[in-house]
Amino acid sequence: MTDVKGMTVAVLGAGTMGRGIAQIFAQSGATVRLFDVVPKALESAQGTIKKLLNRAVEKGKMSADDAAGAVERVQLVKKMDDIGTVPLLIEAATEKPETKIEILKIAEKSLEKGGILASNTSSISITQLAAETAAPDRFIGMHFFNPVPVMKLVEVVRGLQTSDETVAQTLRYAEAVGKTPVKCNDHPGFVSNRVLMPMINEAIFTLQDGVAEAEAIDEIMKLGMAHPMGPLALADLIGLDVCLFILEVLHRDLGEDRYRPCPLLRKMVQAGRLGRKSKHGFYPYE
Ligand code: 3HC
Image (tube, rainbow, N blue to C red):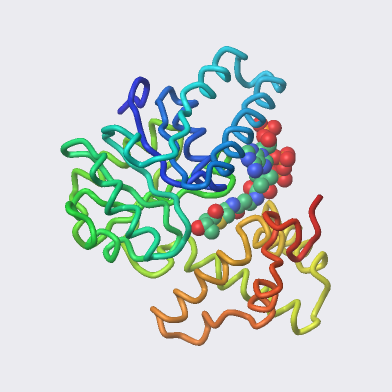
């Protein structure tokens, strides 16, 4: 099995997903160059990682030394030139194709020969992103789930040009950071969001139609279906803007009415109610 101890990886984007990815690699012994253009995002990411690792120490799940070591291994990088040369680069930037392409084109210069460029995109075509890079055979989707330190899955998405070797090495990296990788092919929403987003959308239609209050919808799905959280609370965790974006991709690329985003979801996003990150979604947050 591949060991990431002593290896250096780069993570591009210090948002919710990027900081989670940085944390699990650092916890597994890798040095992480965490890049973001917004200095505040880097500071906030470092704060979150410290807090979560301290909590693990308090719960007796990790030694104080291991936690301190992991925090130290996350190096904050404000300029892409400072990333250095790495064998694995994971992009977790804003879910906008033009932004991702711009970042990937610069970042790939930091890849060591034969290195892998991975995207944590939740719905943008891996084949499309790969085609913009110099080595599409070494480009792959590495789709993590929120909260990254807790969720076991990495959906490993193979683009049309991804090589067998890139797939095999990515599976090894995911296992080395304690995750369970599952392979799928590049298709809108992959497996996870193609199945999950219609359920979330339907829950929002159910709320819009006045069938039940948000709490009741979530309680029914939690208690009746044994989901760890209801679909509306989950949408708040994922971010309502992210849910809307993914549904728009599914609707446009699969061309089926069943993926049409619920108007209430659109309204919530227009109102800036994006879920936990804006302290207000289907529920208020402190
Ligand atoms: N970051 C890190 N750790 C967290 C966390 C966070 N944001 N939230 C909770 N945890 C940890 C807690 O510290 C606790 O750890 P412990 O077992 O070591 O004590 C553990 O998770 C359980 O937390 P809680 O007891 O506080 O709460 P719950 O038991 O209710 O679990 C949950 C919280 C893990 C979020 C659970 O409700 C859950 O699994 N929800 C579903 C999440 C899900 O479906 N995620 C996928 C979203 S889809 C996605 O990300 C793809 C994208 O493309 C859209």
